[in-house]
Amino acid sequence: MKVLVLGKSGQVATALVSARKGVPTGWNVEAWGRQQLNLSDVGGIYERVVRSGAAGIINAAAYTAVDKAEREATEAAMLNSEAPAEVARAARQMNIPFVHISTDYVFSGDKSTPYVETDPIGPVSVYGRTKAEGESRVMQAHPGATILRTAWVFHEHGTNFVKTMLRLGREREEIRVVADQYGNPTYAGDIANACLQIIAKTAAGESGTGGIFHFSGSGHTTWHGFAVEIFTQAARLGLKVPACVLPITTADYPTPARRPANSRFDCTKIHNDLGIVPPDWRPALASCIEYVIKAEP
Image (cartoon, rainbow, N blue to C red; front, side, top):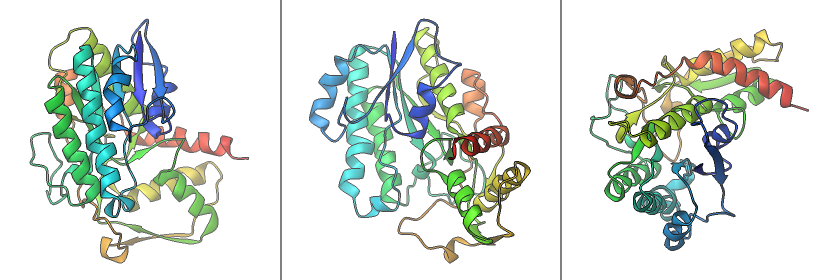
């Protein structure tokens, strides 16, 4: 049986294809990119997915260029809300498990404590609004679907904060990093394992797998704290790191799209209801950095 993953080139999709644990016995993971399914062609999604032969679907595809979305709202809405709704509609018709990956950007970030699933959403960017709309439309199309919100994703592949910091660490002696935004770094491989566990539990008929769940790495920090940990681990492995990592404020680093000041997630629900425990992100970071070093020419 096949777990169909949408978003072939993304960090989570890459992790899903290479997953070694969590894949249900007798299942295989198949990732589709634009060649197999053009999500911009919303009218053709339903029929193509219904004919896919999938026994479970994980939607890891999204428009994730947060700042660019401010001027490309139509494109962001198409990929983040319209397309997922059509995939969800197809999954419901097929009566198969469907996991849709969402984001911390559905919240304003104004809360002083970690967000739980029942907190009111309040996106403050085009990206956040389109992802929030996607959540709503997915649940309308497939009430039994699972929405997995995550944040601050990193992996060996793709573009992310870890790889950017490692590159800048080689090039500069001083780096300035925002220190007033808080969140939980999350390894894409851990997200992949959580998605596969949800698919397996849903396919096995376990109750309570539908709805919204938060999943992020255990232990919160700031972007500055994340950078410091990256360079600490990189230095242990003999990499060149900057002499100084200066903390700055969000106001010191203006961007077209507003970022949530608080992206911390409370992951109690996914632990209690599904038995899925988010791991500490630091060991995964160490493995990620080692892989990046070995992969460099």
